[in-house]
Length: 252
Ligand SMILES: Nc1ncnc2c1ncn2[C@@H]1O[C@H](COP(=O)(O)OP(=O)(O)OP(=O)(O)O)[C@@H](O)[C@H]1O
Ligand SMILES: [Mg+2]
Image (cartoon, rainbow, N blue to C red; front, side):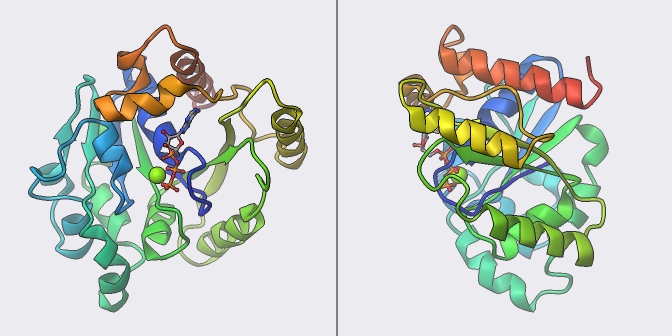
């Protein structure tokens, strides 16, 4: 599943880390692929990027094997293909490579049977990296932030998903929309929830992720919220999102 929205800072990486961890704690074997040169998911999972020798870049550009690049995390059953800043160059280097849109799909094909779920954290753009994420996935999860202009750019994203479906990956579907950074004190947040639920009636997750300081603090400790503060509202929400996700996938 690709986690995508070209709008920046909507909670893609936070959702990759914490949904991934929630699923792992619930008994699934999960691989997260960090497809963003910013590497927020890698650092948020406690990976020291200065110490890794191979990353998503080598997988996409140098044909490195995923199994040689995968790192364990502090959570049992949660694994990561980390990203480094090198990946920024891949957006351009991929252009001249054979099968440039399908490099991640080809690489993941070798390990797909080893995991119950693979989550791909896409960068905030619609370039070749995101196209690789979408073409490798069966499903897209779209995080939408409960803020002004929440739906801005979503129609562009939907058009791109449609293009990928038509040209590269007919099995791709929008699996869900998850509302993030909900602030119960504002009517704006509630308005966005209502608007998104009208727009994506069937696909919007019932679980809404609240805006909480603990969720924004956890990455600096290199831990998912479930390990950092399991009693917090953020941990409860991502645990519930994990359960809802597993129900949708016939896992419980
Ligand atoms: N529910 C939340 N409550 C409070 N802060 C949050 C929440 N979700 C995310 N954040 C914070 O908001 C910022 C953006 O979140 P995140 O990095 O997950 O978004 P993103 O969509 O991956 O961003 P980018 O587009 O840059 O990759 C981060 O500092 C993160 O810690
Ligand atoms: Mg991110």
